[in-house]
Image (cartoon, rainbow, N blue to C red; front, side):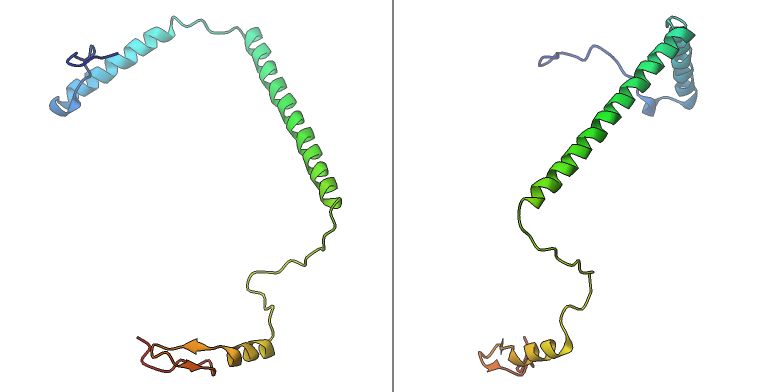
Length: 132
């Protein structure tokens, strides 16, 4: 943890003030060191690789089966709970579907009361006045 007036212990290269060859040298050094570190890694044997792969596949299958069973029980439980309460099945409507006929619309327009900016009311559905 850094305290007030304490300098950061590491210096990071600032590529803005260096030339492209310096940047390429820095990157090549990094790649060389990273390759050297990979030589120290103890890689798993093919037997260990197969064993760990089987563990992974087994865990995926078990979790998938658990989620499938859980989903089945939740779906059926909700269906049973819904069946306990009386309800009407509502026919689905499509967005934009006409649910009102033209006669009902005409009746609605005749009965609309619109208040204009002068305070007068009209029952024709037509706004009179300046409309400001």
